[in-house]
Length: 359
Image (cartoon, rainbow, N blue to C red; front, side, top):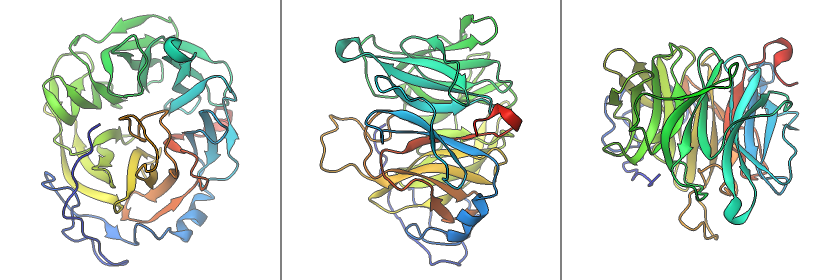
């Protein structure tokens, strides 16, 4: 994405009520309805204690082993386990199924001109990998866990740009059949979400479909498209579809009420994480019960030529970036879960349901 200009950034002291300090200019429907409990650079130790008893886990991508792998850890960051262990393949962008039994992801395979990004799924313990599609990206699960939606790559030549997509397809796990979404004009979309009622997709669009940049809702079985008028990118829907979180500019995690009726809209916009330049906030994801969010936190890339790429893209190095968790009801009550800064990003929650989630 092209970075959004963030202006008018004000911070309040710990313990004070959330004031009129919306950090993104002209944020529509702005509403401050959380409590500020801390500062962006002061982690909450009591939150870490709280997370020790939280049952669900987090999966994320990292290059700490010299290539990109998917790791699973407890909600407090303990017991990290490498799920993939493939030194010749880069696994990225993990998205767990609604029941936590499986994880879909992308894998960058081969080298040089033959390099390609493909979509797979596997059990949540890393076993039984199944290919879904070649030259594909941005997968997400249907609400019943029986299908995976994904975008095809826009070009035959490999690119890291997450918005280089054209055409939405839906793969059925049981029949292994694939169908295309009825709207053939879907392109330059990334971060797909399939609404819990199965009627909508929500995603970012960048330079396509008549949009310069935005977060949109579009029909799962039709051609209607609606601008949610949220500044930023990479949305994620809560388990009930009634709230949305996203990267509100480059430095904040936004939350809003979401109405996916006949005319979808987002209202009551506020931030639950407010960071300060150069510390960025990306990849915000709701916990299974909506109590927390996990997200990526780290400094702007410096000292390296990323050739026009951005560290928030899957598979692009992000030195100093770590996975964090924050309280979804209070501003800046947060804690880092990884500390090595080895490009730890793209976190997602894995529902723990008996033996169906990795231990």
